[in-house]
Length: 144
Length: 144
DNA sequence: TCCAAATTTAGAATGATTATAAAATAAAAG
DNA sequence: CTTTTATTTTATAATCATTCTAAATTTGGA
Image: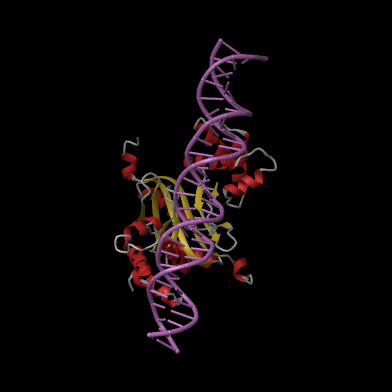
């Protein structure tokens, strides 16, 4: 099952309707590498869905996060929430200068997540494994 | 060196003044288990520092985060940023119902953090290793 | 004691996110 | 294919955490 389907299935299983807007948002989330914010999703879908409302984007994100199929990573130094449809255990790196978020392959996260699942006693909904700092590119820039 | 000193030293080393307000904020951060928000710090210090301003709390937190001695964990389902003065590698657990954040002992986080430090190429400033869900207490409550 | 720089403060401004209510749409039933 | 009803979208207003601003205060050093 590809990632878009994971999201759309989750909606359906809750008896929620898979509207064109929701489908577009799921697809964008599933295929984007960007860890987008609500605003980014809105701007990227606007051309194809001129009637799309920012409220719908926030609403859909909220649903997906509460279903546990999208992770809310929080801010990357830009005071805006970034979202991640990749719920496979992995590490996120946020640059506090350019505010980009990328994935880092890791040997240890999976074991960590299993440990948390096994020992916490929490009914887990999502993960936020993110380190923030200055990315290699921004370290080189004449910071001006 | 105890945790309060870690914070105050960091301020001093940047040539910043250790005012009574800043000291109080550092002490509270260093000794609290709560992963407090700006508002929580403000309310807890108000009795002893009636003139304390919320702006000062935000300002001080911002400085400490940028010095890398306090981690910004993000929201615990309450849309407010929680802060953590414990920068030793550890896992945080946030309950999206009661909005409390606690620490979880972990075998694997230290290795994870070392891996990120070694392989990312980032100049790291802070960590946000947090899993969110429903805590054991809240799982039992008649959710009402 | 006096000065210059840093800090605090109160309050206003910003801006992300949420709430609201009306209009549009979708599924279900006939 | 219509009607019905619940869901969803939309635009907009409202909320509220956080940041900004400028004046007043405090600090440490000369």
